[in-house]
Image (cartoon, rainbow, N blue to C red; front, side, top):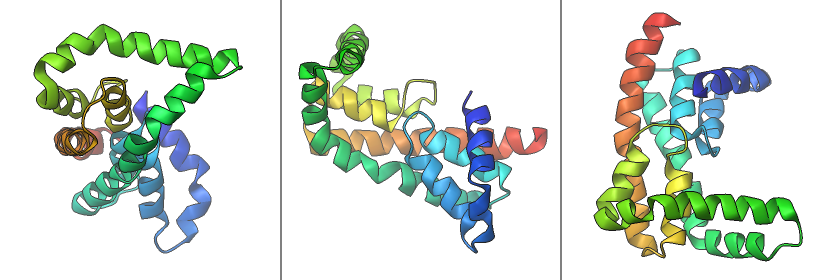
Length: 172
């Protein structure tokens, strides 16, 4: 799924390729997006034939930039969603709350390291954005949550580098 989305976004952002830093900008933007995050950014970087080191740095920075803002604002956003007159926002809040509460015991049991592992395993539905939402719902200390999310991103980025530049580069 991430590969298809990354390919689609690279195609949609093709106009940026005319810029001298267009490939890098595409990877950066994709890495900032929820769902795709650095996983999608590294896949895009591989497809765009960027060097692994350059790709790694750009994707990691792109994925990290939204996290402090999310950690600061997510509780207000979630509260507004819960109180919203729009049923879609209420349903989204309920969905997120149920999903997180289902895994609450596991994450709380392992605390900091539970969040690191959750963010660090590159599976659908895991990642920095989801990690920030989990930290907010569980009322984790923001500084500790940010550190845990960053460590998880480092872990996920290493795994994705191996997949994107090791496996994908030989297939694509």
